[in-house]
Every structure is written in C-alpha cells, then in structure tokens.
Length: 278
Length: 259
Image 1: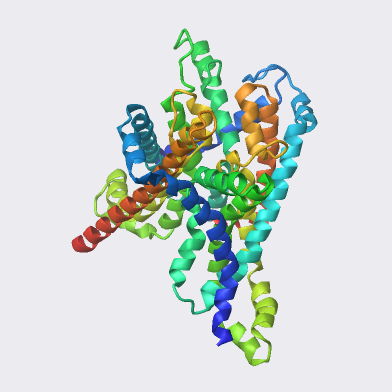
Image 2 (image 1 turned 60 degrees about the horizontal axis):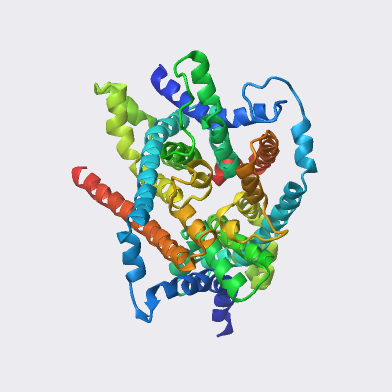
C-alpha cells in the first residue's frame, strides 16, 4: 500500500513547485484579462482590431517565418556536409556550430550591432571600396532582426538536422547517382525528403524561438520595429499597462502552441504521403 | 570519391557566418579607440581592466554564477529522483507528468519572468532574489528531466534487481547502484542547465531590482547607453568561459552527448 505511493511522493516536490511557480502565476496573471464585470473576450478582440497592435503581431510572425526559411535553406546543406564529413572533422565542425549556441545571446546580438551600425564594419567597408557614398541604414530595421534571429537559431537547426542526417545511409546518394541523377537532383529528391522530420523539429525551435525572443528585437530592432516580446516588456514597464502585457503574454503562449501543432500536423501529413507513395 | 565542391563552399560560408561576428568582437576588444573600431589602430588591454573594475559587471557576474549554481542544484535535487521515478515506476499519467515537467520550455521565457514577477513579487511580496532563483529553477528542470531521464532509460534494469535480491533496500540500491551509473547524465544536465541559466535573459528581465541584476541584463543595459570596447572585452571573457565549459564536456562526455 505505502509502496505504491512512493513514486508519487518522489514526484510531488517537482509537481508542487511547478504548480506554485509556473501554473499559478500564469493563471493569476492571465485570468483577469477575461473579466470586465463579466466574462469577456474584448481585450483580445480589441488587441487584434487595433491596427498598431496587429502590425506588431504580423511583424512578429513575418520575421519568424523568414528567419525559419533562411535557417532551413542554410541549415540543410550545412548539416548534410557535417554528417558526411570524416569523424575527426565532425567533432570540430560540431564545436563551431555549438559555440555560438552556448555564447550569451546579448554577445551575439552585440556582434551584429558592431557590424550593421551606422558607423559599423559593413558600412565602413562598403564606403572604403566605394560601392556606397553614405552609410546605409541597416541597424534598427526588420532586416537586422532577421539576421540576428538567423544567427541566434541557425545552430539549433543544424544540430537537429545532423542528428537525423547521420542516420541516412551514404549508399542512398551513391545509388541515386548511379541511376543517373546529378548531385543536385539527388540531394533534392533523396536527402531533402529524408530530412523532413529534422526540418520540422528544427523549424519549430527556430520559429517559436524567434517569435518569443526578447534580446534580438530589443537590441537590433530599435523603437520602430517592436515585436511581441518587446511590446510586452514596454507595456509592463514604460506604459504601466499590466492588463495589456498579460494579453500579449497569452497571445505569445497560444501562438507558440499553434505553431507547434501546425508544424507537427504538416509533418504527419507528409509522413502519410510518404507511406502512400512507398 | 570526388568531394562536392559547391557543397563545401556553401558549408564554409555558413561556418564563416557563424564564427566571423564573434572573431570581430575578439579583435575589437583590444582596440585603443574609445568607441568600437574595426580594424583596430592600436593594441591595449585597458578594456579588460575596465571590465574587472566595473562594480556592476562584477556584482552581477557573481550573482549570475550563484543563481545559476543554486537553481541547477535545486533542479537536480528535485529532478533526478523524479526522472528516476518516471523511468522506472508505474505512475498514473506518466506521459502527462513528463510533459508537465518539460513544459517550462514551451512557455516563452519573458512570460515566465513576467507572470512570476506579477504573482510572487508584486502580489505575495517575495524578495526578488527568490523569484530569480525559482524562475531559473524552471529553466533548469527540463534539462535534468530530459538528459537524466534518457540516461536512466539506457541503464540496465537488472543491475538494480540484483542489488535488491542481494538484500539492499530500494533507497540503498538507488544511492549505491543507480546514482554512480548515471553520473555522466547528471553531469551533462548540470552543465547544460547551468549554462542556459547563466545565459538567460528573458526570465530575469522582470526579476531585477536595486542590487539584484543578472550579468546578461546588466550587459544589455550597458549596451543601451555605451558603445565602447569594454563590452567586447566582457564578451570575450564570457566566450572563454564557454570554451572552457565545452572543453570539459568534450573531455568527460563528448559534445555529441548534449546535442
């Protein structure tokens, strides 16, 4: 009898801490956004009907989507290259990929401030060569946030994909080539479909990561390119609008869940299609 | 076998994209100019001494170390037995409980920090430092559950059964047989949780106050008003820390184990 209770006693401290310090704070913060006299969704409908707010929501989705696509395009070939390298090189290449990931994101965003700034490395280089005569506005733009997000999350995409691609038999590529496909076609028709599960997992990480990131839009986006996370912070601090901040908090959580479900659903569909054609 | 040249060039460019920005930071940290310049004109170590003499950097550095250490420790104390129980015991709703333990990774960090600030600092008047510790515990716990959990699942169950048969109690078997066999998993999760807590910004962003500022937040505040190479110097110091950590992980477990 007591024996059977032991697992629950072992799990209890963790469960209690999570309920007390994750669930309860979330509920107590978000619950009031649904009440104004009685139950209401007006806080949420008015958020999305407001052009300025919706613009921020839209920008957040757009930037996350573009960053995810770039990470897929850059990540798949790179991960394939790593997975096909000789073992002694693979460790080094993985370290190069992991190093930025384990470096503080403020440091990583700061690097792009020095590169993209008005008096930054890129502008100075371009002016020295004579391509441009006055500095381009690169920093504090959506472009800067996209570059920063790609820089932040590309390692995650690559590492996720290497794990999947390592298990692909090298002979498959050779077989495709023997059967007459050139390398590019073999890559697109053979490697790409096999890496879909990795692309999906990686995309979930990159998309939700960019969508909820705070550091990058704060440091690289400036005041004109606010995203959901920076908007939440601004509402809670500078504007003192806690209700507004809590509304954004729930929108961020729900958007994260929807993106995860949507990507997994797409993955499920593609799996079925693969089975049907096999 | 002929190597695909275009793939090689493509991958080379991506690796350059990953490394060059950090290399630039390293170079700029030695510049003599009072704002960041690249390429640098002269060589100095002055910015490094500036960092070590900057009280707010040093205070927040030690605070970050302490919070990361104790949050990770708490996550291990609570997470290791929980991971064991989830792997070995018949528990009602096992998968649900496991997902629940991993759920802090799904909630955006800034939201975790914000709601915790609202609830326990504003509403229940906890000191900020306790909020920080608990917030960072939430960051650490999923790493412990995931990494230690998979280590236990790979461990042969029969060695525990042998020790039970030989007369040890379940607790004794856990301490004397299971724990020594999962030290690598515990160590890996400690490292991962520690570095992620140390580097985290969103969770700490709301949970700061007079005298209680974490290093990344303090660095971020500094960047908003300054553009001098001491930021680069501090970045280099942090990168050195990352390199040491990666070296230790590589020597003990292999980096492959954490990816």
